[in-house]
Length: 143
Image (cartoon, rainbow, N blue to C red; front, side, top):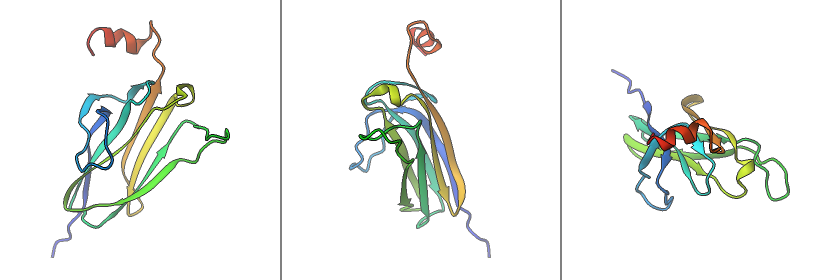
């Protein structure tokens, strides 16, 4: 008797259209990238495709660059759980940049684990764009 093995794959990552977490519809990808411009309400993250994993619990963690809370204390990484709903399922893990921007700049690492093993791991660099910077250079050329 063969044992079904779960399969996980990141199908897209980068900047997405604004996402409504109450909707069943996943956000649409706008730009595939790991370099995220530090702009208010920019949506970034990735979509994980899970196959043969119905009922499995996924634990996600989002490590941020020492973002302080309202009292100035560094917040703990964001964490949560979600259960795979069927055998061909997609899940969006992402975040946005909010005011003030300056303390959101840096690396944001997003990790998803299943049964104690990392099944998805992606790091995004939130960057302040400078007029003469590399991002601005390529952006002017349509990339």
